[in-house]
Image 1 (spheres, rainbow, N blue to C red):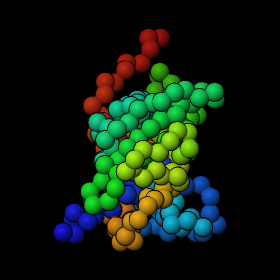
Image 2 (image 1 turned 60 degrees about the vertical axis):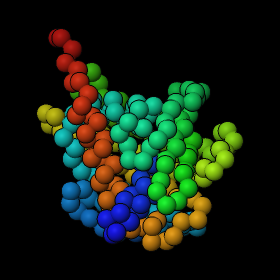
Image 3 (image 1 turned 135 degrees about the horizontal axis):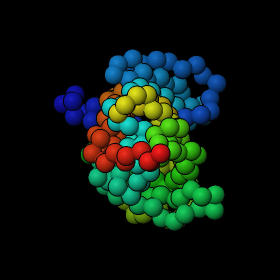
Image 4 (image 1 turned 90 degrees about the horizontal axis):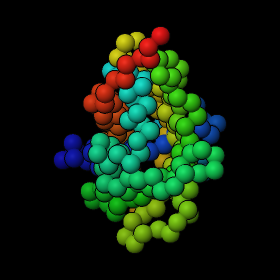
Length: 213
């Protein structure tokens, strides 16, 4: 029963985005397999979460996995629907994601996603992506709770052949009526499972050969 409850907590804590604000000190809650830090987001029920560590995939592969928001439903935990709605004027895109969760109602969110930098064809450079909820971009769906606070970022740097250093930050308020223990228990598992899902997806993608000199 506890294992199942931890998975419910996973669904509520994950798949989403990255904390920035808040004057609270970070608290380290895990050091293996990833460093995970948390702090409360003032004025909300949410927490800022910061996770970082090594993934066994190249930065280019991870970049390809994270850029393909339409395929998140194929590998991200509890994502049942994901699509790019339209491009935005700043070169980003508006995306839609729906989560199907046990016990509680489905959640969905609309995010403005911007890619700030990319890994070069030769494998150098840094991949950076950020996103923020735009919950009123189009009307809510019946029987689905719209998440209004969901923001985050990814930063991926090459570390060596076939490995990368990833920093994943997010803040999300699960919204609606959620028992407190479900919103918090399993939080570390949620982060680890998301990072492992990205790693597995990235490793399945082809490695592009470097350009000829």
